[in-house]
Structures are given as C-alpha cells and as structure tokens.
Amino acid sequence: MYGGGNTFEGIKTDSVAQEDPQKLAAFEARIARGEKIEPTDWMPQLYRKQLIRMIEQHAHSEIIGALPEGTWITRAPGFKRKMSLMAKVQDEVGHGQLLYSAAETLGKSREEMIDDLISGKSKYSNIFNYPTFTWADCCFISWLVDAGAIVNQLANAKGSYGPYCRALDRICAEESFHLKYGHHCVIYLAAGSPKQRAMFQEALNRWWPPMMHFFGPSDKISVHTEVLMKWKVKMGTNDDMRNQFLDMYVPKILELGFTIPDPKLKKNPDTGRWDYTEPDWDEFKRVINGDGPCNKERLEVRRIAEERGKWVREALKTSKTAYVTPLA
Amino acid sequence: MKSLDPRVNRLPVPGTPGKITPKIPLDQFGSYEVFVQPKEGKPFQHEGIVHAPNLEMAFVLAKEAFTRRFTCVSLYVTDTRDVFVSPLTDADKNAYDMISDEGVKGNDSYEIYHLAKRGKQHVHAGVVTAGSPEEAMWKARQTLNTKQVFNIWAVKTSNIRKTGEGETILWDTLPEKKFRDAADYKGGDKLKEFLERNKS
Ligand SMILES: [Fe+2]
Ligand SMILES: [Fe+2]
Ligand SMILES: [Fe+2]
Image 1: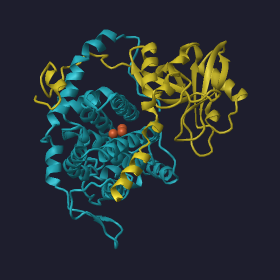
Image 2: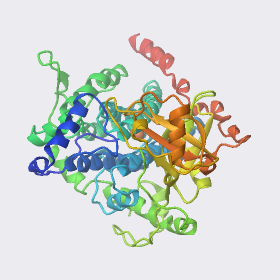
Image 3: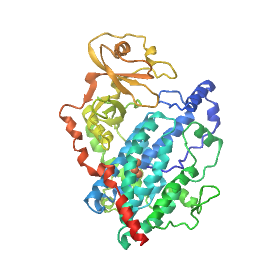
Image 4: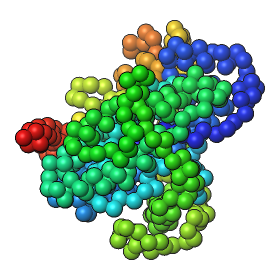
C-alpha cells in the first residue's frame, strides 16, 4: 500500500531537451500506442529517475506499512483474526519484495534502496507514521488505507513501465483479499457492542486527517507534471484519486452508522466532486520531514532488523552467486 | 525509544540510531529468476525474481514470495546469469530475425521462453537440444512456433531448480488455509442483519 502525492524530484525540465530527439519521439510514440516500456528499451533519464523514485517509495511503504498492523498480530481478537492478519502482513512484505525487484530493473540495487530508507533519504507513505492505539486502528488500516492504496495501485497498473505494471497486477489481486478482510473486521465492530462501535468511531476520528493527506496535496500543474502524465508515470492527479476514494468509501462508512469527522464533507452536485475541509498540509509536511509520532520508531525497527540480520547474511555469503540486475 | 508495542520496547539496540554500519562487499545476495506454473497442463511463465545465497534457498524464497495466495502447481528458479537473452524487438520485428549465429553445436537440453506480447510475461515455449544458447535459439526457430515474438530467453535445463516429484505437496495444504481465501470474509449476512436491526 502507499499514498499518492509522490514527492517527485524537481528536475529542471531542460533535462528532457538534452535527450536525443529521435529516440525521445520513438519512446513517446510507443507510450502513446499503449505499449509498455521494458528495462532494455531506451528511456529518458528523467523517466528512469522518477520511476525509480516512485517504485522505491511504494516498496518502502509496503515494508513500513506492515509495522503498524503487524504490532496487532499477537493481540488480534481470536485465533482466526490472528491468522488472517498474519497472512495479510506477510502479503504486504511480499509486495515490498515485488516492488523492489521492479525498481531494480531500472538500475538501483536493493541494498541501496534499503540503505536510503534507513538513513531517511527515501520517503514512504506518510500515513504509517501514525500509531495504532487499538485494534480498531488496525482495522481502519486494513480496510480503508488499503482501499486508498488500491485506488492508486489500479491507476498505476495502467502505467507505461512493464515490470512495475506486472508487479502491480499481482499486488492488486492480493489487495482484493485485504479489502474483504478489512471490511469484514469493521462490519463486526459496527455490528458489535456499543463499546466496539465507539472504538471504531474513535479510530475513524484519529485516522481521517491522515487518510485525507494520503493522496497528497493538490497537484500544481507544471510542465513537469504534464511530462510525467504524458509518459504514464503519473496516472492521475492527487485530487482525482482522493475523489475516487471518497466516492467509493464514504457511502460504505456511513452505511455502518459511523460519522466522518468533517462537517464540510459532502458531494457537490454541481461539480460532481467532493467538498471537504482543506487538510492541514503543514502537518503533512512536518510529518513527512520526520516530525511525526512514529517516524523514529518505524526507521529504528527497520534499522535494528538490518543490523540483527547481518550475521545471517554474512554466514550465507558465497562468491558463487552475484547480484545482477533482474531481467524483467 | 518508547513504543506502544512492548516487543519494540524489548528490542536490543545495536549500532547507532539513524546510521547503518558499513556492509561487507557481497552483502547482497545473487539474483534468481522465478517461473511459476499456474495450472496443470499450462506452461510455466516468468513471474519475477528473488535474491538468495544459492539456488536451493532461491527456491524456498520463491515459494514464499510467489505462491501464497494463488493456485500454483509447480515452480522453478534459475540464476539470472544463466538466462541467455535475445535482443528486444517491437512493432512487427520478430526477435528470431535477429538470431543469425548458429553458435557451438552440442547435445544439451535448453528451455526456450517467448515474450509474445510486450508488457506481458515470458512464457515457456519448448525444449530443444543444443550445444550453446545461440544454437538453442537457432534450433527453436526451426522447431517451435516462432511467428511473432519480441524477446527470447534460453536456459540450459540443468541450470534450473525444478519442483521435484513429491515436492508438489508444498501446495496441497493451500485449500485448508481458509484465512487465505476471500470466501472466508463474506460479511454480507452480518451487514444485512445489522442494517435490519438498525431500521427497527
Ligand atoms: Fe496495505
Ligand atoms: Fe500492499
Ligand atoms: Fe494490502
């Protein structure tokens, strides 16, 4: 899972002007025909760079996203929920693996990506910097954060880079399980005791603001964004994704009798789009830059895992194998 | 570090927070390509990669990474360096038209994979006997259906770690794992009952 609003690097647009015009035209024609780009095809530097960044952020989000849910495995209510949640978290880590592989085909090694995550150089979805206080928080993630991720992932699966699309096809298939599981969990809380209902309502109140942040701030339509859209790297604006999410899930939340903590939230009949209180983008920026409730813990847990696994990797190391760039 | 998760609070803290201890060279494992057979009678297709210290571990990791939620009847892995790759073509250019060299002749068995559609997976196309990947592709051109392919892979059969006979039981327990099954999360009845109850 991951949020849109990828922080694309502000590369000077003249970097595109430096590319071979003939090759660039052939590349753009291929994308316009709806064909995919494969790792050995010629591609502009900007395309490569932004894709690495986007796929890498997505991979990190899967890995870090497993932490706030994973913490509830031992405390999930009942054996069945424990098994289900464990399987779901394993899926998320698996998604990270698939995505790292896709990014590797573009020339950045997995080790570099993991190092950049731990050192804070690479970002991941902001929403995972918030804590899961209760079981209901965990259910909110399983159902609604995954739902948001699916909106993004389905859009990106229609993008132009072959290895990323193939990874996303597998991921989306698994996410549909997560959505069913998450909805199931929340239905049971909704249909449960007043205490269970209150527990989910509180979780909803806590998670709504980060959920609105999840899709990123409104895009400033720049030449840069236009190029990324033309190249099918970015598949829709952040506002489009947010609207799609609200369209699909607000009715489902209300159906269960919960209240969404935003008095301004309603669909505007004139525009066909949702009106809402503008999310607090200062908080978003503050958290993404490291000052959220759990940023330090998330990265420390990753770093400790890396350090503690070191002796295993060293014990298994052999000169008979070699790291090479994956084929497809 | 103070966490809501007691397990995190118990973690030992090696090294320096925020810093990675420099790694030894070769800390990265090798790359292995993973092929999955989705159903009995269907051809194997390429699914992705795993990194592993050897072929055997690659097989185990591939089983975890690629065959959890899906029906899968067989799996195999091979070192990425053992895959011989043809040029990638497009439009109406056939990758087989780029194969001009017959290479070294011999009697080894080679597996051939085709990319029939750009953006899709490489799918197993057949087996040929040859002495080199070049000859394998040359022969594949004569014996396999090679109408329009965009990319060809050739792998020596002996370099592939296949699922052995008796190992397919790895996937036999999957149907018993109900928590991996979407059918186990039907909330419809519970939801209906809840909505009825709310109406009255
Ligand atoms: Fe998720
Ligand atoms: Fe995921
Ligand atoms: Fe998920």
